[in-house]
Length: 169
Image (tube, rainbow, N blue to C red):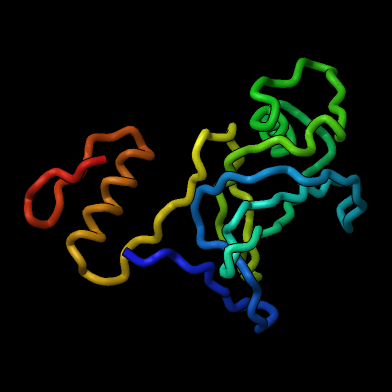
């Protein structure tokens, strides 16, 4: 199977092409966290680096924005838990400097604008993670490999391939 290229998505809103990674899970490093002001009020901009994921093999840089308030189920709190490996204690303050350089696994999607959206953040895995794209052809081998990967991510037994054999996870 060929190595997957980073696609360029066409924005439906702006009508422009923007670089974006295919939806899936990626190992990423938090490069910087900055306090910002948006039209909705104060926020935090998280700057992420996905090593070697750009089309030319260079690092892919993306950002996400969260509220600066870390309630129990807030996106910011989820990111901090993933980066630290432990939850925040009630009333605990977070040092921005202590988070930079830490790794996590980002689950990426695509916004209507064509840019990536960070859908979820989980603790880093030991290996680079990248979800394969579902095969566009009817190739039995590609379909079996995709089904095996999908089952392994969900902790389910392998699905049967089109020829009736089980696929290895």
